[in-house]
Image (cartoon, rainbow, N blue to C red):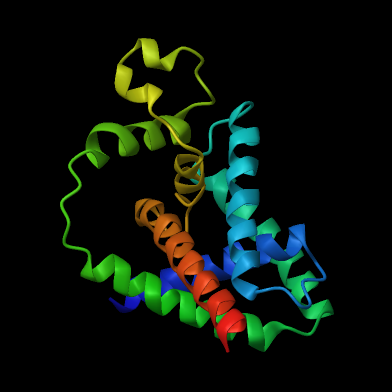
Length: 183
């Protein structure tokens, strides 16, 4: 459970840095919005790069380091390091609870999502892959984010983190906006 929390914390920082790249000022907005925007940026970056190269663990680690360096530079310029770590801490706690307390059996993950994520990691985009089997026609942008998190740091366990972090960020974003509206 501690390793899940550490990976969740590091992943939420990764999303946060990507969000600050999209919106470096981010002064009066909801912080969780930067994590959500970061997930969108990383998803489309993964899709773009997969047109040309496979999203191998080495390439994914390189992208992770580049995003972290640029993102930390933006966060440092705005003097929001402690605030960012605090919000990433909250997101990490909720995502860790989601990952550890989940008891629902999801039998379609091994049929649809995991094989396609493996294809994304092993080769560039294959046009007509759904002709091979219909299950490869049911893809989403989140699978590209999952494939991007298969890197040398998280290994294969990283493909579970993005969905939990995005879910946690959306829940906290809605909670914060409702709190602003009603109180």
